Length: 147
Image (cartoon, rainbow, N blue to C red; front, side, top):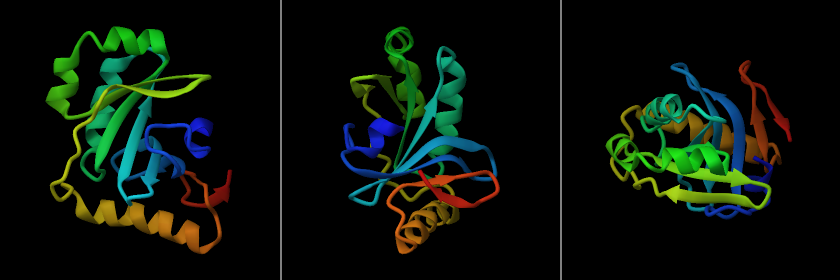
């Protein structure tokens, strides 16, 4: 997440929160881009199949969703592009040099399946910005803290 905060990602500078609780689960990392798009990330060390299901759930309220893994695990997962295409999610690798997109997630331009959750996520980031927080960590109890 530190690499996302300093703009060293394909999405540039973003607002971030971790472990964002959205009732049906917890998103590992949720970001809002400068364009106002919500992007969700599910991080796993090895179990990419489980992460694809979790990332797919995030597409109900975000513009795009990604599985994030270390390079060797991402390489193994990338041999199954049909699964990522079926779920309409992407795959990223992450190491000390940054985040790299391995499989691009399609931009989900349709209205989110759960529009109120989409609005709730934007409200979370709006409230953080109003409080002067550029980066916020969401905790399961709903409190915001600076990173």
